[in-house]
Length: 96
Image (cartoon, rainbow, N blue to C red; front, side, top):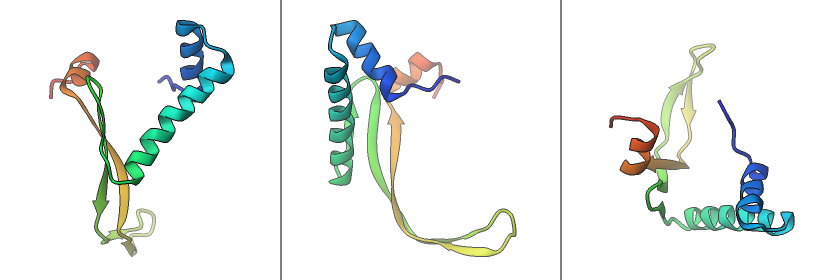
């Protein structure tokens, strides 16, 4: 399994557009910052042909410690979720 890092994204920008390393890193940071801020403000982030990031609100519930089996309260929380677009799913080979 390959992991794409911030460095990999910056390197791709440098190679494709001839940017300096500093400018490439700034661009990567700006994109992630915009995504984070939009999600923190409750806005969905949609990338045409890729997918949508959104914040889901999960209610508090009772869970179990998998090691001991002891019940525990899992607090309410907000989580980021990604839903791939149909085009993206076709590209990666899912039949959904």
